[in-house]
Length: 150
Image (cartoon, rainbow, N blue to C red):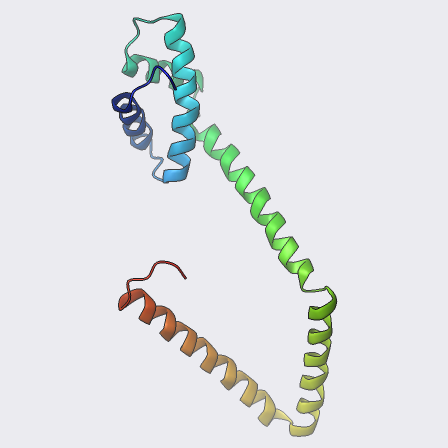
């Protein structure tokens, strides 16, 4: 982006946000692609203004406009997060975790057989208590401490 100054980048950002792209990471990716294409267009026609170059580049994307870039980004992120999900899921079936899961399952099985439904009520109450305490800590950190890192 040698030929594009910060004022021109601001014009490009305003144009992109006027098209309905409010996500900052998406705007930045579109700005990078569009700025590179604007440099190419302006290299061929140096007298072309920034607004005209932006409109020309936008028109080159056809009817869908910049939504093709959005779709590419969405697919890339979906692939990345799906991979992370499966890595975390498979990690639960490795040596220390699988042993802990088996011990916990056996413990629940024998406890439920010995104590009946009263044990089930105890387990549900414990989960509800953990959820309420976790929610209270979350709300406390968010409101009182104005903490954004959770």
